[in-house]
Length: 257
Image (cartoon, rainbow, N blue to C red; front, side):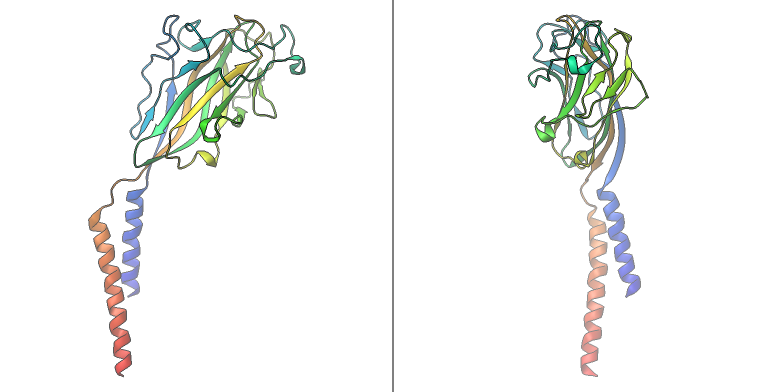
């Protein structure tokens, strides 16, 4: 009887593995198709991963076209920075909930999504932004997601409220700064609904000051839940029923003795 139970549990274990196949992924938005005439939506074909739908980045609250090519770059950002000043207490700008870059990712039916990190590079012009942050629809864009500088880049840092700071006004304008990472916690595990992510920026030093994101990487896994193998269910059921029948017969034999 112990052997039969063990066999039944083994079959159930195999069945559980078949029902929970997990596939890791790492995808990148390159913005290679962006030009000065492509409008508010990135025309670059979005990544393709089986079991998921990846949307295209689009700019909300901005008018016209990107101000550069090969990256998602816009001017007319929220003002508040001070030219030549690296003291953030002197800045007066704030995150504007009506102006952002957005992308939506979604698991397909019968699948769930586990998201681990988002990592991206940033650029600014000489009069560009000094702060940026990422939020998600899981809390209705109420708070900044946990920020990390993954490369030890001292030109960038994360403030206590998880907004990113471009530390030095004179640091490499127009050049790409690497290492901005968002660490996604357990709230982004086993997600079965679409998730929108918004990238906000503020404290630009001038109206034509720019903010750009480039090479945005999403890392995580997608979990599939395929239709169960009915033969395995039948085998497990037969074993369990057999065990129960043997136990019942043994009990009745005990009553007669």
